[in-house]
Length: 117
Image (cartoon, rainbow, N blue to C red; front, top):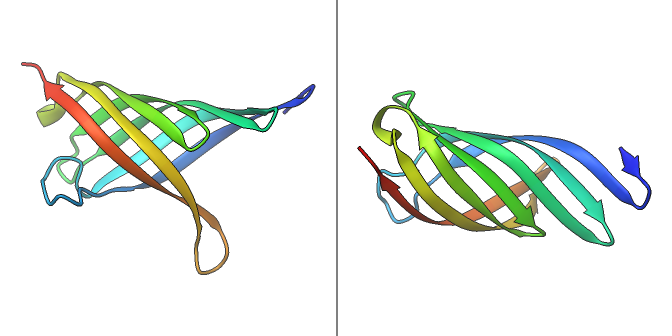
């Protein structure tokens, strides 16, 4: 949708998380995020919400805000072993192309989190 000089779009993205340090937290989880992207004056602002699910079906819930390629997820809870999760994950994103030319995004996270009983 065009709002004067600003463009607003919705975004539905999905992917897989990986913990390159080898730990079990955030490793091999399916992720889905729904959000809104506003572009105006050459700057992109993103707002949304995400769910990460592990092989057991336990989930992590977060909100997401980004300006350009840098953003932050805020953990707002979870189910099962992630119940009571809080914290943040700062990230940077990088656009890449699939072999058939479709756009994809690589997202590198640095997470700080706790689990409350």
